[in-house]
Length: 250
Image (cartoon, rainbow, N blue to C red):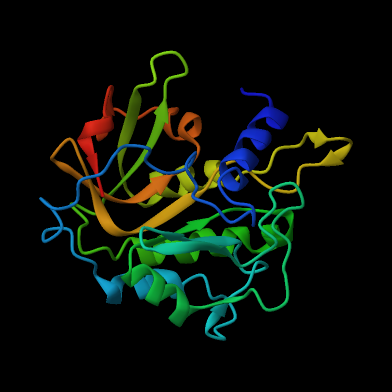
């Protein structure tokens, strides 16, 4: 497996390299392809009622907002700036910051403009992780796009030497989705400069619109750690597509 320190460094570069404020596009966790939305926008319209149901599932104390102890999140995307509900640092473990709690209403307004919502994991929220995952899955599995009780998710990577984008698409029932999210939100047992890891490497992003992949797979869930998402045994509903930069549209 990739050295944890290197992975965290790459993650930090992805999170902070594009912005002096440290709130930047999650380029390492999101589709790097050039997107052309005009041909499929009508078919992939947002379902705001469904999205609000999923987002609200992360509001564990039902106070109308999500703090970093409930679930560390990053919200942003096309037409919106990126904002954390924490200090935004994977090294510190996405620590809570007073006043950075994100109201559900703010998140929904941002998603209506094209923002996605990414869930990370940290030692701060570790005690709530099982509840976060269970709530999220229960809400996500009400997606009107479900087929035979299964939902599609995907992850992308860019080859170091080829520069080409590869995408993996999985069709997941409740148990497979649970496994994949747990792997994304796992915190390792190593240290950085003698300090135990305070956050995990992966993430799970709820997209406001369906991503269309290869003209036939429509997914609303994007997984940030490609190596984790690619691995694992699955006979049916697993699709790996190489040179896919032009085949992914959001």
